[in-house]
Image 1 (cartoon, rainbow, N blue to C red):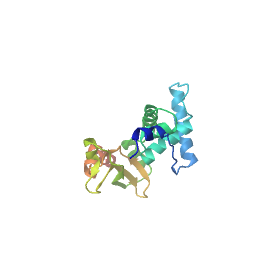
Image 2 (image 1 turned 45 degrees about the vertical axis):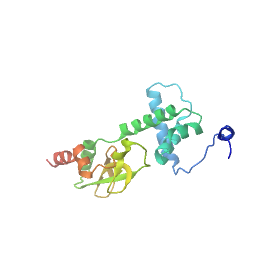
Image 3 (image 1 turned 30 degrees about the horizontal axis):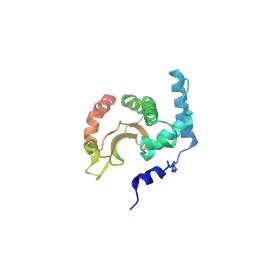
Image 4 (image 1 turned 90 degrees about the vertical axis):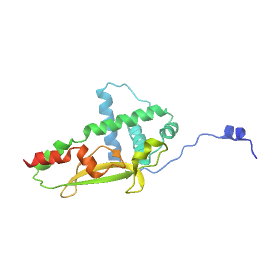
Length: 187
């Protein structure tokens, strides 16, 4: 049997690579969004350039990487990666169309049909009681529930905020007051 203290001292940090299918247009769009935000808040600098921050955040969101793992591989702290993630999510959310504006745009274009559908985006199961609400019995997996509105051609008009995976489509529609907004457009 080997001595575990000796083995722990011999270990070194390991950085691994994974494939992240991104277009340069996506990375540049997110980096430009971050640059404009940094200019607006008069931030002088960040430890990494906006393009690298964009790739790190997209990797965290796409592969559900632990923040500590991404931080260690890029020589920044876990709290820094968390702050970048939250900052870029807020920037994305601010650009998302509101439901009433999205429906008004469809009405102006002469659209008469709006399709509503819910989807479960699968996530890794986290431990603890707090994650139980993310379990969908229908899909038998953990995830987040989203509602999406599309026009008759299938183009995305609006998408809801994330809800626990156990949320039913009708419950999500009630909470977002979708029927009220749709009835308001009929008059």
